[in-house]
Image (cartoon, rainbow, N blue to C red; front, side, top):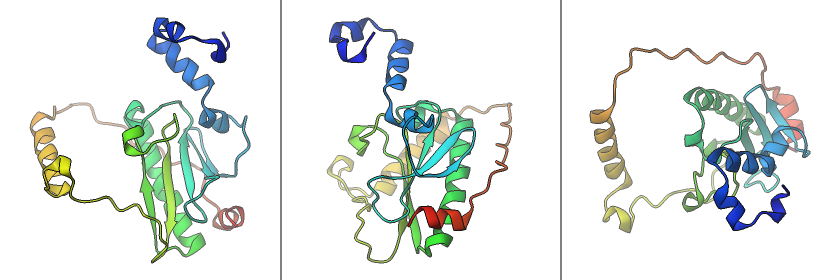
Length: 192
């Protein structure tokens, strides 16, 4: 069925699996990961694709896109998230060297309330310099926290999760390191 012809009633009748498949079929970032939409590829392996952002916050702004469709990162497996974390570290290090950046901002927006605009989980790596004018600093006090510092609120959550954490006898397998490496010269060339 053509997605443009779907009614609200049609959508209500769909199973969660059917809705997920429909989202995947219409996801721009899935199409980029599949090579159906052109992009400036920085890195690729079997789990992720890293591309330059078409609306960069700074030169070299890179997006890491999981190849499996997930709207937000909590929908990804622990193994996929671990792989993404390792890949993010590698690409961040490459960006620091290639651009002589003073730092990188790495962020994920999970859901519209967090500023997410895409229907696909994305990890952003933004090269930073002193005084670059990019505003990513959160307000550390918030009316919803009753004026308390964010660290106090997070600490309370950590205490709760420590008390409710279930021990597991199963140990996780280490994530294999990708044989691919980031070519710093190629990265710098692509990002100019």
